[in-house]
Length: 104
Image (cartoon, rainbow, N blue to C red; front, side, top):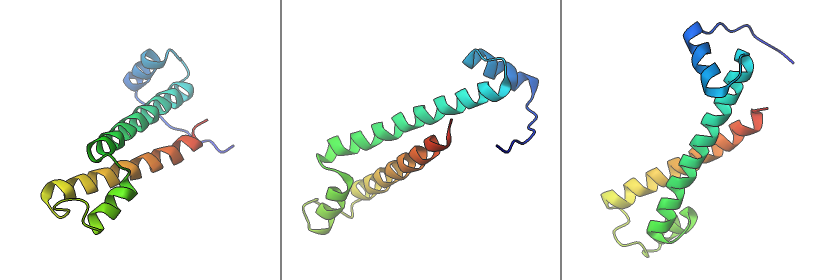
């Protein structure tokens, strides 16, 4: 295992200790990062679920529906904004799931 020396401010160490209940900064930081990743995964899943509920379909189905005319005004501001937001949420979720594999 490769380790690097990282210096964190005492105030940050205190916050990490209070948030996690761990005195060792390496463990406290690891726990805080895991919690943040979990929170962001939940957030991304919630955004995806919102779009799936709004359109009553998955993202690939939505893109196909835009192409074949099943979505009314697929180039409207709302549809384009939702398309970008939905795709961003999926990308975020994929990235976070990859990151969570690195966390021990």
